[in-house]
Image (cartoon, rainbow, N blue to C red; front, side, top):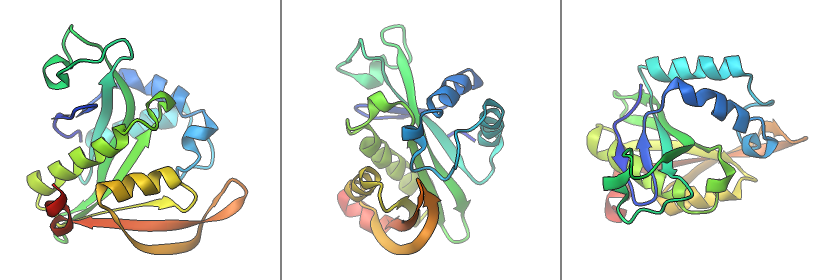
Length: 197
């Protein structure tokens, strides 16, 4: 299922419809975009359509599209201008809370910026803060887990800035780019998030 719209300064988390799937699929054909994902090859268009159906009907997961103003506009007030005729929004990525377990009050977060023009601009860091804020205030969660491949320094920095702490290392956990990669597991608790909020 999709989560509610969440407004930030640089980005907006909101739903997206199936008309975006072909564009997402095309961007996922870039080896650099999928380099750190848990997929060996670029997905097929049919698999992306199947993924979208999973998103819509998921019962233990919440998904958002990551939207930013198009490159021709830089509104002073994103909240008042987005999704109006004043500015066009572009979908540059997706994020999620998956494996939501209300008994144990935890979930797993995931993030993908598939539009490389949005990389290195702090958009993912803001998105993580928006998602954490909603997860810890709107849901009865006490912990959010995540992870990254050891060579993915961008994800490591992004998660550290958001307050995630390294929980452990799964040695040689994934075969990527011709070598075994360690998987770094991370987590953030509601208690550690509150002082930073």
